[in-house]
Length: 533
Figure 1 (cartoon, rainbow, N blue to C red):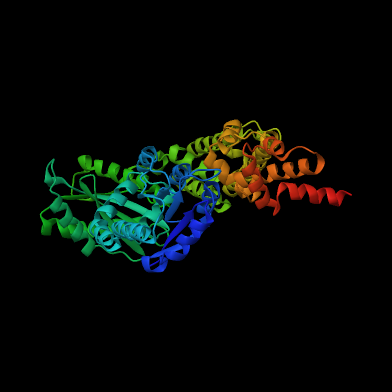
Figure 2: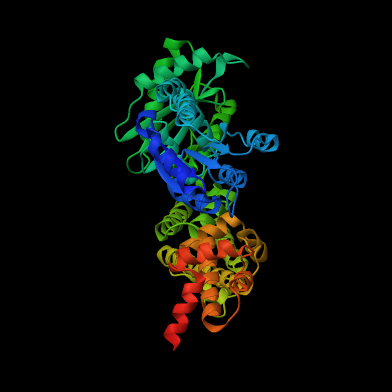
């Protein structure tokens, strides 16, 4: 098992050396990953090393141990803390307890005392690790609940509650083979079950259909849905709806006398994406309603009952969300998939007037996206565009589809460029603000983000991605370069230069300066003067 990593923090080198050499880290199950002489260095090291345990003194220069513990609990909530101090002060102990410190030790610390603490700490951490990593128990629980999770997946899919990008990920998670190029949903209703159907009868019906229904190049997915039995048929190619109807009718006729049930099946229209199955099951439900007119005990197809000309192609919230996500966040391939999909559906299932309505709403959506991003419409649609465009203006469906695809892809590229420009401008503003305020000892990422109206988490990620360094490292660089220039060009005292570059503590300024340049401020000034002669 991997060793637990420890960070040791104390400003006394002799004490650190004693702890380092007298503790048998390996035998206790630990690894001394790093050391620091003060809280500020420890905080920076902890970010790099990600230790499991921090052993720290309280009284240290630049940042005391209690402040270090508070900040570590924010950055590394799982880290375990052990404090040692030469002061038997109740207030220190009270604060340590409030931060859930594992142990508070008084100096002088013996190797026996510290080893005993580490033994208890390791036992506690092992017990917690066992609780968290009982994967076998989790696996058994997962397998036991897998049928329920699959049922919930099918219910949410048919109810339209899953986003398009969630469906395949959820199917894989629940170990469902869910491939296909076209899809049809159907619903089997039992008329003689009364108002409170018995789930056991529905499960028996489900098993019967699973055992008896089969169709080449088609995969069936059966689930209980809305007090009925639903099936999703996934076809490897185009939806062979009438072949599906024939197979469902065969099994229905076989099952009625064997099960003693009166069965009616409603079949919806074929769709090209699993995210559209809510539309198909809606059609299946509509088909089932015709049993009141035509009588139960048959298989009904909505495409036969309601002429295609009455089908609608609404540019509803789902369609708008898919378009917006594809243009703003997706890839060019996702944009093409959307534009090709709507055109095929429009050609197959709608009248010319309905297709025109969908097209105008699609164009309006693109216009809104451009307006929200403050992109002139002429840049997206060309000069002189007014929005009054008709599908009759195009020579055919291919020309219409190409026009929509080109506008979507062009808008996607314009939005990408704008985001890149906005990010660069934000970083420039941040650099400008730091350049104007580096002398302020209170300068922080929170102060900067309040000025820029951004969240610290988002800004920190963006800033490091664009500059290659963290906010703290960049501020230190600006301050050190300014301090070096003052040392070279003026006779100011070191403590005044420290104040002018944002450091109230001249000792800490000298410490940071030496760490940055490899020499003290006084030697740097002397070297600079010698070079200037």
